[in-house]
Amino acid sequence: MVGIERPDGLDPQTVADLTSETFAEALASLATFDPAKGAARPWLYAIARAVYARHRERATRHEKAVSQLSHQVELEESDIERHAIELVDLDGLTPKEAAASLRQPHLQPDADRGL
Image (cartoon, rainbow, N blue to C red; front, side, top):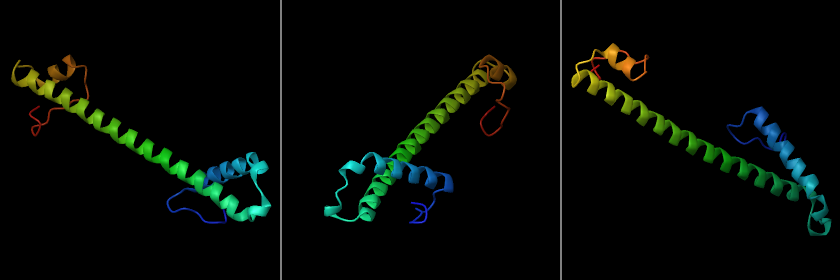
């Protein structure tokens, strides 16, 4: 892949990794290469395309997982804030006391959130 065509948005290290993986797969499947069926270059390009496709699949799965975890963390943070607001509004605690009771010392009083 290096010197052939670099897919947009890939850093040089990723390109080097994909190139290594391509040649490792080519060496591992060298016994299946039949020059009577065609030249080596298209065969190697096909391997490179498969390696890149797997890379994109992994990257997409990773991005989805990160997105889901980020959403989950946001929900957990909003639950903590909701509990803090309840402690302040319903139980009469100060925002500092509510943060301490929830073991969330990073919660700061914020008029917009009701804390």
